[in-house]
Structures are given as C-alpha cells and as structure tokens.
Image (cartoon, rainbow, N blue to C red):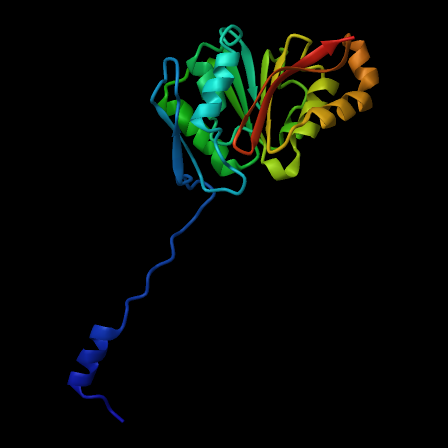
Length: 235
C-alpha cells in the first residue's frame, strides 16, 4: 500500500536521526573524568586530571596533607618515585613542594597521557620529571632508565591487588633504594605482618644492604585506609 504524502510527513517527524559513532584512534586524547587539587607549594590550588578507570582513586586531601607534613624535612631536592601514579597528584605535590625530580610510572596508557598533559599545564620543567607507561615492577627492571637511588618512594596501588609487594621487592633487588629512602605505603589494611614476611623472604639481599627488616616511621588511619611511612631498618 502506498503511503500518502501526509503519512510520509508524519513519519519524518517521529523517526529519530541516526547518530554517528565517535571515532577513536591511537592518537585520540583521553578525556578527563575528574580532577584533584594540589594542596601545597608552588602549584597550590592547581588541579591535575584523571580518567575514569577501575582502582584509580587519588589520595584524599586530608591524608595527603598528613603525608607531606611527615616529609617536610625530606622533600626538598629529593628524587621521588610515584610508582602507581594514577592522577600523579602525589608526584606533582612533591614537585610543588621542592622535590628535584619525580619519576611517574602508570599502567594505564590513557592516564599516563593525562599525567603528561598535567605536567605541561603546570609548566613543570622537562628535566624535573619522566613518565613511564607500564607495570612498575617491570619498568623498574629495565636497565638504563634509573641512574640514581630514590630518596622518596610512593607505592599506592589499587588495594585489592597487593601490588605494593612486587614493587617493593623489585626496588630492593634492583638496588634502587637505600637505608635512607622513605617508602610510603597506602592500603586498606595494616601491612606490618606482611612487611615482616617480605623482609624474611629477602633476608639475604637485605643483609648485603646492611638492613634486616622494615621500620615503620609514621602511620595513620583515615577511614578504612591505612597509610605508613617506612624505611629499611639497619641490621
């Protein structure tokens, strides 16, 4: 049956136009889903952005303030590792407060691009940072990347995966930290027992570095989050 001109007109009013699907390419810029502010130093009140990704949860302001109060005497001119960088806010906070250099390692390629974008927006000198995309425990084994020991290490991975353990193990086995290195660990539980077990498993290596275990320098709990500052304890 043929449609009348009136029927064709009515149908044209009710038929929704098709939307073209957005094109994505390897060179597409990631889209920010949120932002977090730097709370101290030269970049105070400036924001860094992050994508919507599983396990990505920037360290809350209150906890970050506590952390950098702990580090106030050690942050200036420090060489810093932000090993599970996420938004990069811990590393940028360190640079904002006078750290000499920060190495960012981020497993998500889109988020590592966001860290690069944040560094440009903050006008961080390229000599003061480097960004690696990959799993930290693998990146840290690549010869030639790291010519200096780290003075401060941030290990703040997704809580459910216990990634802090292989990262800390790699740092010790690759001789990238010393007895003076301050190690920040953030988790959803107290890690003291697991750190004692890890020290036992690495006893031979620790002995060559003049250490025997991990010493808790500072610790706090904010809600369900347990955060601590550690260093290698002398034997």
